[in-house]
Image (cartoon, rainbow, N blue to C red; front, side):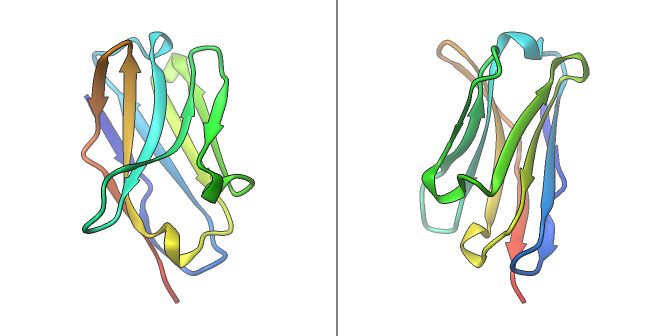
Length: 113
């Protein structure tokens, strides 16, 4: 029900925009978020945006990443600027309503020269 796109290979200092489109979900009801996982580690929070548009970011991405949503299009975005090699991970889209979570399958982001 959630499909991410926009990942790829980018050089350090570059930018990418991730997109997550939901189907069969009324996005306006959900807190939406982005998480990431590197091999051998647990999935960690990158950013969230509430139904009211309040945003939250991991300290490691503050000032570089921006999350936004378009409820009419059932879409959430993650604009990633000034990417660093340590941002390399699989990025997952999340939609949360109370205790119910929906996840996408992830999109790979690789930051390397």
